[in-house]
Amino acid sequence: MNQAFASLSGYIEQQHRWLDDLLLSHQKALVEKRLDAAKSFYECFHRALQVHAQAEDRILLDLHSQHCASPRWNTQVYFHEHRKIYDLLDKIGERVAALTEITTLDVIELLDMEKTLKGVLEHHGEREEQGLMSELQDCLSEQHSLELIDQLNDYWRDTNRLVQQTVAGLQYGLI
Image (cartoon, rainbow, N blue to C red; front, side):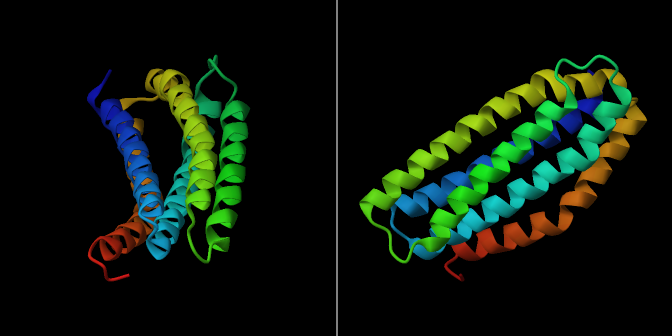
């Protein structure tokens, strides 16, 4: 694996870990029954995951469909999984937004819903690792991989900054 693509894979894996951490922060706030924090962390997670998936749709999957002649999975499989993720995100988001207080039953129901989302995300991440990322590695030059990292950074920059500011505010009790 060339160094440029190792960085691209690392970049995507780092985003996945960051997204996992955001969801975990939301779940921790739920368990602690800190309603405002739970809502804010979920909003950050929802927004960040949406932008992450949109970047994959518009940048990575576009390149994948153009440059990878014999993919393990058709590009439409990734798009379908993203739609499923969006549906789960919205369903959970509606449930979180409707909360005016947090009961133990609310916590249990939301954690169950989020377990389903986590399962879909884990399966999707494994598919990306085994298919999309390894296939892009084989199809793209080192220079193209470097440009791709820059393009992904540009796509993510504003959302990443906004989410980090919100999370910092939550952690320091400013929000």
